[in-house]
Length: 638
Image (cartoon, rainbow, N blue to C red; front, top):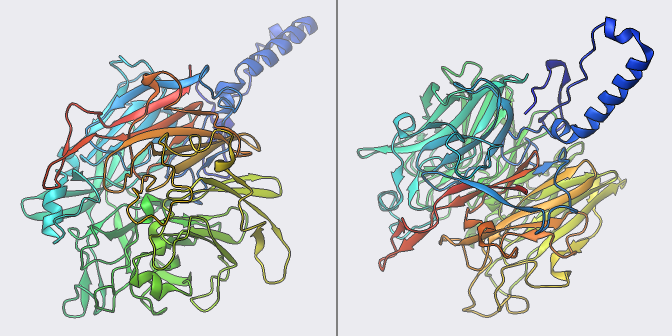
């Protein structure tokens, strides 16, 4: 790939680098001839046109869902278009096998300085539950390549991962299979660039769980982007004052055995935020937020610790883990942090279960400055319908925030005045199917994806056992609004309307759940829904990419997955492409990676997969050594 001149680097609104190299000046003597200048000018113009794709599409993805607002959109994609994402021109290019399941979204960096390489390399960063981080050449699509692996850092640095069966037994939930077969690096890392010119340098921040003997630990590790070598590390430890679950002498200690870092890391300037929920819902656990100063990555410094339920004990009290299906906390233009919590105590003073919380770091201390709590919070808590199953999205250049959880409702919240549990949301409506009584509920996991086109913003939602739905945010000038509103509670477009339904919106199986949601024993084949990202060239050529289960329920099972591509301008149109319908088995994705959206950058789509598993008679999950292996799968134009 061509190197980008320092002067051409510019930072996009999403925090990604977009570089364009200006034409080099010709020697002065050569430029004296007007005819030559004309020829040279035409040559330069032609060169720019011919190289427009390679120069204009240079995008970095340094964090989960593209930016810290968590829009899930790459708006600088000039190669992939609805016109060429089809069976003839698009398909699987290569896959890179790794040593464990990939819950962390793959991250992409262009023109990276790599130790031992003479020229900058486009790099894909992949983290696994086996406590490994890989750096691959993102542009090397030779399946037999012996040079695609740039570096690998493993358990000698991060420590051995925890065996999931042992961990479930240790926390008192022996039948728990929420995360199998090992627990190591679950969250998406965050990358800090220290040099943005071609030959980029930086630091990869990773949080890993490990077990040594009988002791569990979590640690924050800083790796060199160039080599994967450890720069620094710190064990994650902390306590808060409180009388809630697990308190001793008025203090609650962070317990790495019970806690799980599923939420993506957030890097805001030199502050790194790390959020925790519970493992297997085994008590005592809480929602925790840690803030570290990482200006010196050799010695990350703990700034503050915050707990969301420090004061109440009870079967469904305390708790309120922060998990958001792996999404990261969102940040607004003023630097405030937003996240959703799960089932737990709520009092609006120190306990914030089933809430969207706004925190600001003030003089090195985290302060709750506002929050939203739905009116039915107590009901959500009692029936395990936590608001915190979905992530939050701070709609850029606005005052509104999106959130949604297990109830299947989508909330539009005024982030300038969130209500503090006393004022309702701006809007909310049911996205997924509703069943009588107390469920089952068809959840929202992950978060919505945004595409702003002039005065309208499309919001895409993929809930459990539900078609993909496209809503419109439009201007709202009402005195009680916040500048934007949903045009309608009904979808603007709905993928169930395509001409080949149900096959274009769900798995290719004969018993699509339409109209059959009240059957008590019907398989929940569509759980946990689809995980999406969007690519577009500004306001045109939008494609919605969805990774989802192909034909089976994936909540507690490892199942075959599918990658789908839809026209983002209208998801009711027939699919552009999917990995199961090309007529070539080589295009198949492999095993679905739960909660993990695709990453689209520079003409390619990077998708994580899991290891195929076998389940013994006693319910124990084991790696199927002869089955699909966990991998980074790369799709693109053929």
